[in-house]
Image 1 (cartoon, rainbow, N blue to C red):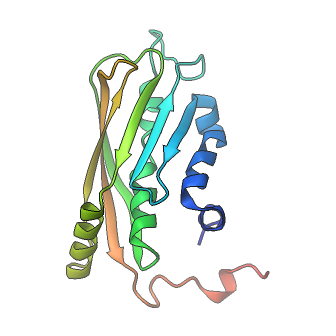
Image 2: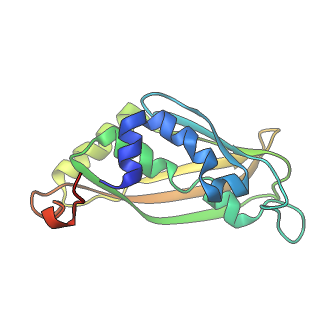
Length: 171
């Protein structure tokens, strides 16, 4: 378990996600986690336009738009599936629809039905690659960008996913 995973377990995933607002890349880009449901079925994120995330023509830098969407589906699914599963980001695409000005936002939703669908598939196959999509919108609700994430999910395997004893620091 990574130090960040330990922190999330200690303070709870919703609080941990809100703390991402002070994670240096997000702090500099102006990304804020506005709200996270206790079960992580829904996470709301926004990003205001600042000198640190503005591109050459004065609108949101594309990398910042992607960055504001990067970790959420992975963290949400990892938390909701539980410790018996390995969840990683596999790939992502972003489609820019219109220039982003002002504050933009994205709402990530992960229903119980979708979590169970992924769990069932992972029980039947060695690995699965579920896809998730989120739309970044401006203050008027107009689409700015669409991000698609493909995750890698599989059941943990005894031995294969164990951390060697000598790599765990002494308490």
